[in-house]
Length: 376
Ligand code: SF4
Image: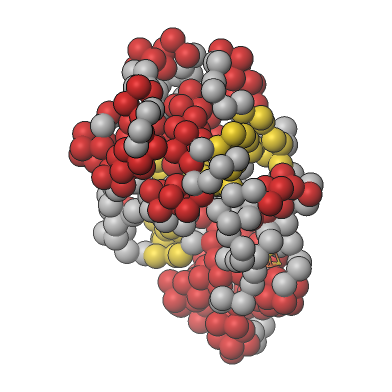
């Protein structure tokens, strides 16, 4: 089973390829329960990074006059899977959105994408072909990294401010305009549609994960791999290594560096392949500077900790004595923000120090690692 078609599907093409949602099976007494039980039997988990069981989220958001939000914002610059999905198979996402709306009793549905996103024409054309029970509104969200966080979307749709709200209350309790809200990634919703279209058993046996692979591979882009596929198998799906590889960043900008390609991937949206000729600490310093600039600057770890760590990493690359400060500061970021943004930056920084330990030592010894020496 492949989620992505080779070219964009209009409604007729989508129905020929994927089938028609058997609504009759999920209406009437117990229909909503049957739908959520099917999602549970399929073992579907969120594809937006959290990996939370989708059936649990659906049950939590069940309420009268609830709202369902499809998150297609994809804030991480290394991930393109949601955009490719919306460009090629928008009706699969919209079927999933309608099914999620039915499961929780939603009377309103919103599809969020970044302002000016290239997928807007594909989404608009798909919506024009449909006559859905729950009307779908498209919201264009500011292009910021943290704007795609689920409470940031709730905040934006309620008050026009795309900054995260914090861990409590959860959107299922008090979401958009105070109403119970389900926020699901567009990939999760497409998978929900496939659960219904294929049946949970068939889906479970045939499902694939969408992963964006960029960097030193022959065919960068979005690939489909079996759940739990190794990093090496995922790179092979993208044409294999284009040149000698030094390390891989697993999970996007808030992810983890590793040089062990045997590890398995599950629920990972993006993989970046760093060539051997590149400097891992220098690349990491650039990503940390981006993450520091993209924070919403409303919590201590983001206002002070993230810029400090980004500056420490830049200093380390220049050969400055910041390694001791970094070892002290990185753990202070974790679990202290209202959202997980600083946790991701801490994970990235700590894994860079481990994975590139030889280059870090070289920078500290002389200000230049073997890579920078090589290009001098
Ligand atoms: S942790 Fe950072 S990004 Fe998250 S809400 Fe606080 S300031 Fe904003």
